Every structure is written in C-alpha cells, then in structure tokens.
Amino acid sequence: MRLLVYYPQRLPYPTGIGGAVVTWALVKSAVERGHNVTVVSQRNDQDRMQEKSTDELQKLGVSVRLIQPANATSTDAASKMSSRFSFLRRALWPRPEDFYANEIKIAPALEAIIREVNPDAIYLYPVEATVTTNRISSLPPRLAVQVNLGGTSYRRALTPTTTLRQKLTDWSISFSERKWDQYIAEELKSCEVVISHAAHSADWLRQNGVPQCRYLSNPVVDAVGDRWQELREDHEARVSVPKLLVVGSVAGTPQRASLKFLTEGLLDEMAKRLAPNSYEVHIVGGGKLKPDVAKLLDRPEVKIRGYVDDIAAEFLSSTLLLVPTPIDLGARTRIVEGFSFGCCVVTHTCDQKGMPEIEHNRNALVGETAPEIADLVRKSLQDVELRKRLGLGARKTYESELSADVVCGRMLDQLENLSTNAGRGVHNAAKSTVGTKTAGEKGNSASLGTVRVN
Image (cartoon, rainbow, N blue to C red; front, side, top):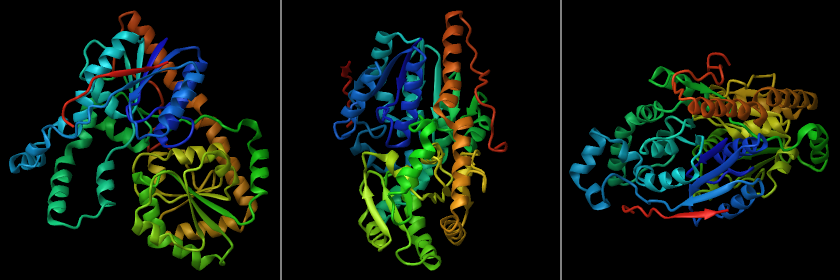
C-alpha cells in the first residue's frame, strides 16, 4: 500500500511533543508492515527538529515532502480584519476560513503532491490536515485523527488580557469560537474513518454528526521492551533524591495548565507533607517559561531542566511521573509514555476523561484537588512496593491496550481495508469498526512551492 501521511505542524519523531510521537508510531508501524510511506509537512525554518526528524524518517526508508506555508492568519487582510465590520462579523457570523485560512490556502500545494505520489490511502493528523484535503477533489480513502476539542478556550484562559483592546479582541474570538467544535465535526464527516485519541471527544463527535468516529489511545513506540524492569532498576539506583518528573512542552496548553496547578497550590501542599530536601520536582520539556511562571517555580525543590535529548532516561529514573493536568483537553501522550516505561504515575481525574485506560490504584494514582494529589505523592514516595505494583500495572496496560503494535495495528488494518475496498469501488464512510471503547466504558498570499527531501 502506498500511504501518504500529512501532519502539517511537525514531522514525526520518536520523542518530543505528542503529535510527533503519535505520528512516528504510525509511520514506523506502516513501514514495518512493508508499506511505502510518504510524509508531508509544512516547512518551518524555526523548527530546529525538522532536519533531525527528516534524517530519522529517511533512515526508515520514508520519503519526506515539505510544503511552503501560506502564512495566512484570517479570512481577510489584517487591515480589513481591524475594521469594525470585520470585527463584528467574525464574532457574530464566523466562517470556517476564519479559523483555517492557512489550511485552505495551502490546498493546491498538497494536491500537487497527492497527484504525484498517487497514494492508496491517506492518514491525516490532526483536524487541520483534514481541512486542507476537504478542499481537494477525487481523493483516495482517508483516515482522519482528531486530537483536541475546546483547546482554544483553555489557551485563552491561561493568557490574561490587560488592555481594553485585548479584552475586546478576546471577547470577539471567544464568541466566534462557540461554533469551533461544530466546524471540526463538519470537516470530519466526509472521512471514511475518524479516530479520536481522547475518549470524551470521540463520544461528543459521534453525538454531533460523525458516527464513524471511534476512540483509540495515543500510540507510543516501545523504547525499552522486555528489559524495562532491569533498565528502571539501573536508572533509579543512580538517583540520590526521589525525582518527581513533570514532562511536556512548557509552551503547550496542557503543560501550562499543569504548571499553574503546581504553582497555585500543589507545590505548597507537597511541602506541607514532605520533609525539605526529601524530593525534587523536575520540569522537563522544550519551550520558554513565562517570567511570572518561572518566578513562581523558583523554589529549592524545583529543578527547571528544559529540553533534554534522552527523554527515556528521564522516564526510567523518575520516582514518580506527576501529571497534574486540571483540564479535560484531549489525552496526555506523556502518560502513555510513562506507562510504557513502567512509571508510577500520579495524575488528575481530568486525564481519565480522555484516557479511560487509567484506573486508580491499578495502574496509576488519581486525585482531583491539590491536597488529594499531594497525599497521593506522599503515599507513593513512602511505599516502594506500591510504586512497583503500579508501575507493573501501567506496563501491562501499555502492552495490552496502548502500544504502537496494538493501536497502530488497528489503524493500519483500517487503512489497508480502505485501500482494498477503494480498488473494488467500495466506499462507505459510516461503517468504521476500529476501536470499540467509549468514555463510558473505560501573510495573506500563499506560496505554493514544495520541497522534496528524499
């Protein structure tokens, strides 16, 4: 099967942000099945990982194509957008192109690549990729992945406004975005298979016009295999002070929410329960902390590490993986990664909504308030056997339900079936059978140049 993978924001890579990790798992699994894979993304000269990602993909035998971005940010030119009419029109009568200007304008460049590659099936991640292909006619079957619903509202809530103009702009955007999730559903309707990596989002989409949507967890490639316990013991033996790992891009909405939860209560609650110098909180991940957040994190027990090359070593040496995400936005790839490394995970109840495989006291510890989570941290730090039991439960859950072999295997089964049926003239978007779990069950002118990197 000739498979085209379109992930506009980044190139797939085995570590880093969730999207890169998830798409890497799909690409690697497809190559291992013997498929011919072409990955398409948008060129980003500011992304220091793009060249490295290209090299890793080429080692797999994957062709990489980069599209020059359109750099469009709205329906109209900035001068028009600043007019009173445009301001009110966007708030009261929003249009899809208000949200997806770049995705729409880049469609001709992507179409040229699709015609050249002539794929048997297309994998799209995330919904922005689907938006672009919806502006192209006569496509092969598509499997679309949806990631987050309601993400913009959380992002705005974490970005305070000060001036009257900022407040008015924020009001206009928030009012227009009341229909954003419905626009996402409209864009996904035409895809033969739709996967949501968050269970509660899958439920919402099925109830709002996308009956073929199914939940599958974020897939993660197994980096340690059968030696995971041996590797954990070796890495943990080198740690003199118990390490609480908080991992993720500090510029991303989930991690910003987690850091807010830490600085507004959890750090203080842990300090009340744990002796000084008896633990360290390691903040690991790319991006730049805002000065006010960095100031709040300036505490003896907090170590701000930034981006690290060897993230596997961080997971393996962590005493606890702490994921206090107090918003029900998508699902955390970092938890799946933690499960794969046999980490003892302490997380927030919100993360269970997106990932129903999380079960309190079986493969993780789950709390809701800062005092509750601080109690769970103290309990797990004082009980080695509890940490080992939860880590073993996490690893078993990963192997049976979350690994790339399992999750990507199901998606590739669907892509292969779509490809075969398309060859026979069979086309039915409403009968996807991939996955069965629900949350209840557990610049204004586009440059259309392209770059070939192969």
